[in-house]
Length: 126
Image: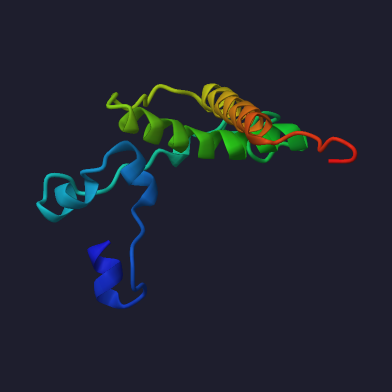
């Protein structure tokens, strides 16, 4: 990262994904405790090649790979927010299921809140 910045080939380095699993990454890099930020992308897929890979000819499997990888990072942030350790053993499919379950629960709660706060139909002649 230092070489890229010093050479002028880049102006900024993003650390968003590494921060999802280790919020101390910037300090650890600057103080020399680590040489590189964590990179989990190499294992965030159902399979590295073939039918279940991100290059699958089947769109549903491509979607699970892409959203599952993104969901993996979301789940890590949720663990940190709850004061729990990150779950580096969580797989893409497990992250995908957890993400969908979280989204469904949230949608249900929003729908319920809207129903409770809605005044209902106005009586005829009112």
